[in-house]
Image 1 (cartoon, rainbow, N blue to C red):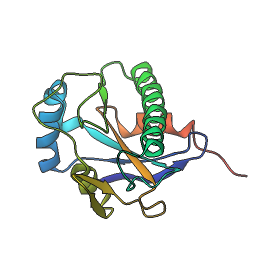
Image 2: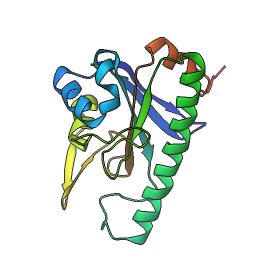
Image 3: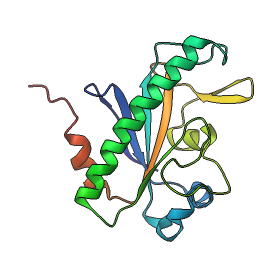
Length: 173
């Protein structure tokens, strides 16, 4: 269930939206993120999309595509860790983790017995999917296959998240 619709943060060149996972997704998340099992009812999933300079449907061995995926992952990794630090400052009891887009496994916590997949992202955002070889990708409504999805999971409240993300939103007068 969507809690916050997509918002583009031009200061970070990233779009985010926030979701309360469905019961079936919660089951998978408890397997992906064993550190969250005690907090399963408090979880929120933040889905990020970044616009890519490359069509990510291109050959997966293309050096430009690989470099672009690395650049986008690094941008996501740095920004999401910035967000996690701010969550901890506001709410020390909250836990958060980011999912490695390549492996579907948590980066900071214990590795579970399942993975977070493009199908899981699709179950939240409802964007179309496309198969490329053995890989599925989400097609962003504006950027199509020139988009890079990433995921962060947290037990922070929506109010805490809104106050953090507000700092990055560009105000127009």
